[in-house]
Image (cartoon, rainbow, N blue to C red; front, side):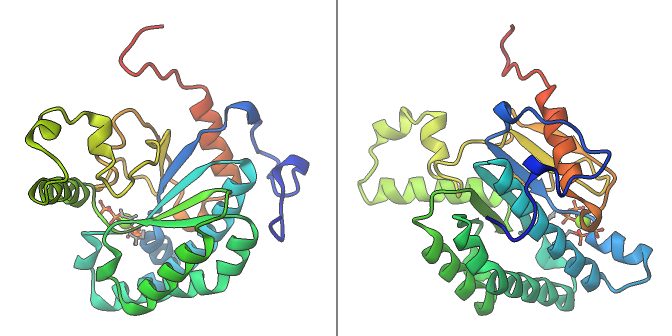
Length: 258
Ligand code: IPE
Ligand code: IPE
Ligand code: MG
């Protein structure tokens, strides 16, 4: 098991922690990790230190999600629009990502986690691509939580990527005109970066923003949203529990009636 924690004996839960229904833990949790910059600004620190603090949170939340038995955890770490930030900030983020994975890969592997990515990672610096490929290869036969990093990810880019792949398969004769005419939603989903991943049950966004920022546009059709003013570096296991507890009280109808 992880070096610390275990919700079951409550070692790591705060006094304000909520009670969870362990029989209905969501299958797929997706988190838009936001607020690092503002967290740093509030403390008169450079934004890069906010990202550094954000990596500590990421480490804690990955462990907790795995301990809770969550099957898929998707973390939005870098969007297709985040390239518009100053180059120093982009390289600080990339460096932090590579360092995190290098440091934690063995522990992730020991804990049976499967590392995956969504987004076009070929555009990331080599230091990131190498460690990501190593992590994916090393953990591919594990059977525990699927840890999915969204990197150079954009929901619109992903939909275009799917359409281009369909067109490519059509050109190569792998798909016929009839296949395309009959393409169902679940067939289209297989061309997305997420492929056979189930849609997220809940999308968590800390930092006070109430928008998707180009995250999982196709997949979020019936996801539950959970917003909070907590900035990502201050996000704790107890906040994750709160989000799950709130999710467990939601009534998901998928357009039908009860
Ligand atoms: C999230 O924090 C990290 C990334 C987008 C990579 P931000 O850097 O967006 O923090 P704020 O929103 O400026 O506070
Ligand atoms: C979304 O946050 C992207 C990530 C958390 C990786 P942003 O901070 O980039 O989103 P906006 O600019 O506030 O919409
Ligand atoms: Mg932000």
